[in-house]
Length: 372
Image (cartoon, rainbow, N blue to C red; front, side, top):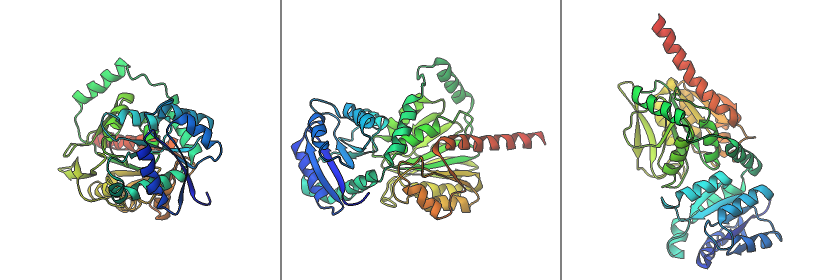
């Protein structure tokens, strides 16, 4: 893309439109090409000059944001960032937007212009620049693949097996998988976790996501698949068949105590401008799991996780980076590949199978040892 990033703002609040425009006007790389208070008016204006990135509210007159998002993704796929009040109550709506193809979500300004400019401007502009680099075709195709999965969340036999596995097996994982992702990662993680079953070794995940959304994201995945998915708590024993997602405002690490892995939550400052940070997770996995670890870096802007993946590799662990063709944004995987930190560069649809294979390898090794 050449020239300035063209942005269109759709929000029914004139104050919000003014605040966001003021922030973006301070960036020499971004141009606000239009604003509207509802999607119907916006569509008419955008036809005159189509934007690179759309900032979209959820609740608006004439047409709600999610309905409009679905229409856009079907007719003219475009990078869309949801602008929402990031509360627990609004989390389900924002997760619906991710499922419909939104690339990111930002928090709607709740304070005065000057305070917002000081506290949030850099984060907001970074989100715009990330979205502008999105491979929207790849992202749309993957989002469509998620929606096409016909999974019955009321499957009683599946849920019974899941509960039975919990009650009979509370053993720590002998191997551990660490996954890092950012922009486009909600879709990538969904398609990765669908390949795993209760025999999979413990999985720890850092996904760049605002606070209050990681719990809803984990709940949806837990309802959808046989594996157990939850927002990580401090000092939990990491079990087979379980997935632990870093809370949106805390770093996730692991520790090794008596040969068992445990989670640790860390309220330290951001690393690589992120909290939670993938590098923080990966470096703890390298130090505590070493050759018993598999590190996986998925779609995302920037380089968070690249150095940590290299440390997992140096410690004898296996490492995977998502390939460019299937990445919504190839920044994080590309940074890892440039460091020669990835032992394997794989399309997204193969990564879940590789994780399951990694788990099966350990299970087979244990069987062989018991037979000696």
